[in-house]
Image 1 (cartoon, rainbow, N blue to C red):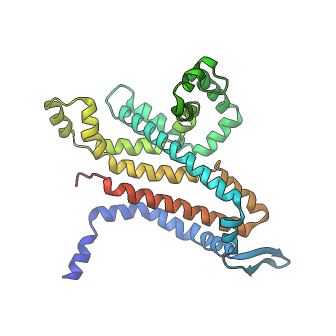
Image 2: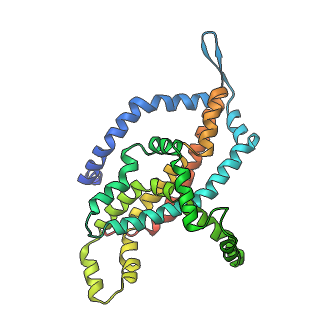
Image 3: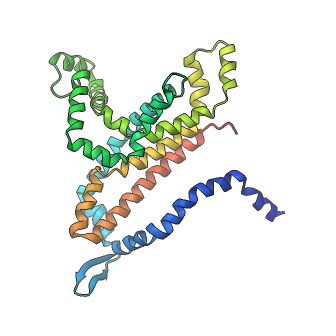
Length: 299
């Protein structure tokens, strides 16, 4: 009986899922497993270059202790990133959900607009964005959006006076309006999330909206009673993806810091990368534990 129950655990959907994951598993085993194991080994040693190659001197947890207690720069940068991510990730989630709802509607050119939103993913977003920035594209767009929204440091005194009139809320308003000047960068980071939200929207049965319309529910009520609850699995998935994508961006201060240490203190850079990975893992686990209980599924 126990054997039969175990066999029933593997469903056709599980088999299909493993088939999709298989390329990643194969790639990890043959391309990444060895470097990952080596970086872990380096982090527990003092690595120097000798006449015959690399020389390893075991030092235990010293690199990790230095990272947590002796390197204030790392802890300060990590805490600053967490505070900034708490707002930026929410903004990206809001933008991607809003655009997904728009792109899920039936209108002329819908497929074209979907393709445009997905272009950063297709054309290696980091590389294209770096070239775009080197040509002055980011500065021009930020100047344009700053002028349009009147949110930059050179905004008129009239607008600043209006913002200041909100009292304690003025700092929060300035924080959010500052992201208006980064609209292009935020849109550039929302391609995958938009597609995942569209997929989630298309899994919601149409008859639920028909019943809501027959009952006289407004669009606002329909969104909060049907769309948002049944979209919570996609919200959790997109949120976890956005967290990992944000913290692994090549322009992040800690990633840049690790690259700098790679040139002169390789073993400490490996320890720092592992500590940073553990921090990201802890954040993902906490978010998943908090939100997974609130996910509503049609099953």
